[in-house]
Image 1 (cartoon, helix red, strand yellow):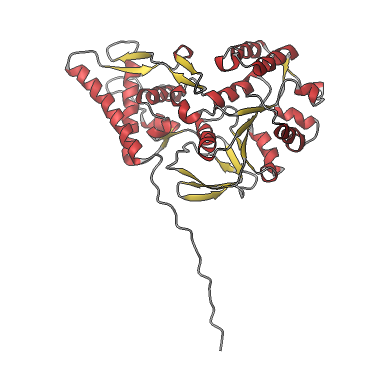
Image 2: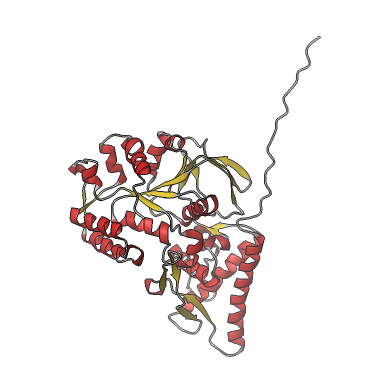
Length: 387
């Protein structure tokens, strides 16, 4: 008699209930803000006033440095967009058009890319040859204005940007109901989503002791291939240059919610310094959300201006500073959060006196794994950072 064939019953992990890109409560608040915007415009018209929308200014002059909190904050200055002002009517219309589009997205519990939002709002105005938008940069800028006007992140408007940024390391996350073990992500890593809010991403098992954020994918790949995150028990992230808000929001959450120190390995040039400034203090465009984006305790690990001599690098790695670099370096030195810090003044002065900049990849001239096996481990051990 043939043996009865038995099969092992497959076990599947119960998926978490999907709740949308942000919380229902926050969605309701955002819709209420959009409806209030529309009500204010309607009331102006009914009372015979010129309908207008006030938008906070996203300029350096409207930024305040909160020394106690160590973050950038937005000031109170606003600009008015009036329907019956020829120079402002177009942006007035675009603002209301995109506000309606965002409300429709929230009510449908769906998200759309910046590109998709442009096309959803694109049409020719009836009876004219005038298009609502000539190009996507117009809608992108108005969406940023809408964010600050409504007091909410773009992600809370259910709009997302192209994914940029990667993570690997000793942490498990739940992304929209799917459990992701970042220890098992192969050579490509986990693509950090544009929307990293707690309703979408939750942190599960985390053994990591710190986060190492590197500037570019090329450097990240070297650290990943050398299994640096495994040897040093950390999380490794990259932002493909200046990190998009999804990466910054994730770094902020890892620091605030899990208490993980954030160390930044960036190029030795004014742009690397600026990237660090954005991660640490916040940016002009998102100053109204620095509380949820900035990481005041983030540390700058390098590469540093004195590494040319300290690491005995060859002249081949030197990239001459141009006039734009010099101007930018001096601007950064005058930032109030760097101005009173002697180590940073010394660093920028040394960069300018060298007359050249260097990329993190320049350390490869020492050895292909010098950055992962010598440079960073030595900095970590000595706690040799700029703050």
